[in-house]
Length: 290
Image (cartoon, rainbow, N blue to C red):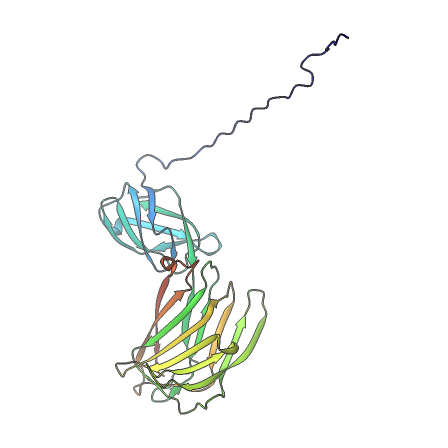
């Protein structure tokens, strides 16, 4: 038998070649360039260093901007410049996006910066009467996150803690959560008494004790410290949480017009069991006696 093949090559596999090209646009000649950011995955309020070329001699000659809400640009306070190294603080309202540097009207390349910890925490009072007592409201919010808020510490430089209005195991205030979808839910939190050792803090809790609020007089004898923490961290993701005391637990300084300063320290949860990812953001606010 003789085998004859016709149309040789008809069923052979075809070879297809794909070609892709990429184009990058460098900044104009003479413009500054950002080659590296040290600490490029971080927290708002943290200090970072830009490395590159084309920097000026003094901090005032530089303008650094970060991505802000809704595509806006927010300015970063420039701290120092040493040769080809430039330091600045990440703005509190920065979000993940490109960092840009401007020197003498010339703009650098974009360098991607990822904000992983973006809390907003403060303390307020419906009234703050001189010589009286006030009911604090502690507000926690975080519009964008990868790391949850783990703990909050608020410390005043004046005033005092008073437990006169508190009764053990009785409601001391209300927790209200406003979600990103426009819903609101609320529930009480309770006073559990005073610790018998250590700092002898006054303890409040809710959610089966997974959320704890501590209040204590400062060791100096002046001011009050409030601490808030939750097992596993606060899963806010666009929500706002308000811890509003119904009881007046802070004695206000007696002189009208006295400015009371609150230092706020917010720590993230530890991410993926890596202590290097434990981030801290600090705020400061002032309330004047009425």
